Length: 156
Length: 144
Image (cartoon, rainbow over all chains, first blue to last red; front, top):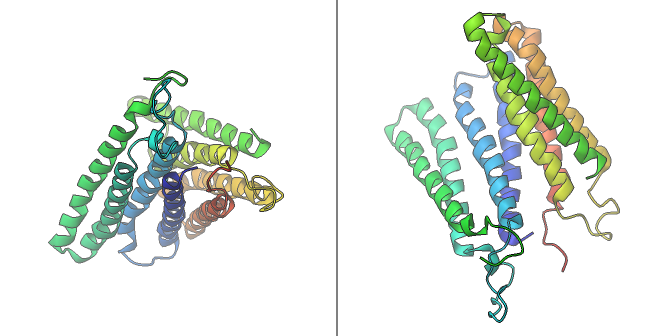
């Protein structure tokens, strides 16, 4: 598994743990009332599990296992310097996906509850901006991996 | 595919069918009004899909396909079998506990039901942390 995928998968496991613990806190709050603020953490619970855990795991594993680009596979064509990694697509662009995705998750899951607790408008703006980060992550990942969605064994 | 992974995947398929069956009944209920119970199971049905189906499938496939431990790291190639079975048991017991009691809690909250909900959440969190512990060491570069 390449270092890029390992980072995604480890981050996804951290979000799985955090999301599950937040879910537990939400359920405990039904039993022992911990405060009105706890309910606002539902946004973070959903964000951590749906985007942080599942989406991030899928991206990491797809980057690892999808068919490689045909770079260096044609007869006589030069082998790339970093065979394997170069055949996965643009590594810098993949890191942009990672940073954007996690910035989006954290902005939303931190500032959306903070806004509902404090009513400070700036927090709402920051939570709103999270959508742009998540969109950037989605676009950069799809652009990067698009060429690898192909039949195995035949150069493109 | 090892037996534990097969159990995770088969359980995930069972939740997939059950959740879609409930979804169909919930849609029909809007028209035919079968039962009050069907009006309050939406959260449970959502968790059957997100935890029982998608998360459990991801866990089963990751347990099966992630790089195995090197012999010198761990004699068990996929890590502790006991821990993997414990993850399976906690995840499913927690999920089913929630599924069976949450609708009744929403129809008429009682403290003991709320305590069971909290227990179901704790069991699922234990399963999540147990899985992270189980798989963490296997997130590594493949040997050449």
